[in-house]
Length: 308
Image 1 (cartoon, rainbow, N blue to C red):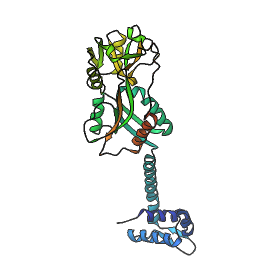
Image 2: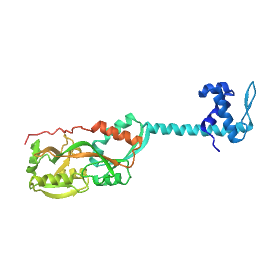
Image 3: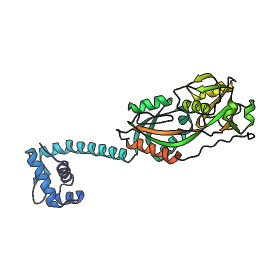
Image 4: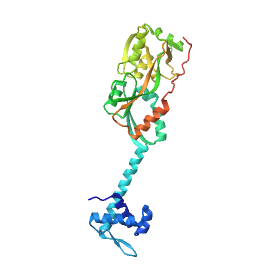
């Protein structure tokens, strides 16, 4: 059986209006084209659906049955098509993504608010994980896309730079280094460092920078989360080097944030997704929002104190 949707719609229009003339006007067809569609439907079913006279059009018993079930089917199909159209127009959908904790804390609140205002029916699920986990989850297809930093290995990932995130020195406000607005990397020699561990995309950059200028530090403690690193610094365990996105606010009562210079070093925040999978329309909207809000954005904190 090969019943076309246009044939069913034509029949339902005639049944609703009890007139081929009025039904043709409703569906935007000529009367002859409408009549042909109804005849084709009857021929395909092998049943008479309408009794036609010169004065009126009446449903047969079988026609009444088809109106009851056919109307419901067409309504359900129309609702489904409208829902798909809304998804296609980025009006609704659930986006599952992953990002490093500093990005989740610093960038995503503004992005979520922007998307909520622009596309209220888009919902987000954000997995805040270490950079290595973000890369792994994107690679395995557990999330639609991710935001991370560090070296990305694997040709199966499409990687795009989003913004630069410079490194900052974090110390207690009673530390001698807190008096300086700019601190040279060489001034960290011999200091006790609280570091992000190897799951962070920043660790390699920090170690490479210290090695390049021959500065020796004592890595006293390693932690996975930037917030834990800051807590240890506040407790007086040591000083820390973290990306600016992970740094405390400039008005933090306990901790000072200083600009690291000679050299000035930053990590690149990266958007990544699988090459072999298209983003859903909703995920594409969130990706575009991140680019709109942050690509080429400059980061700056209010760092008060004297210059080194």
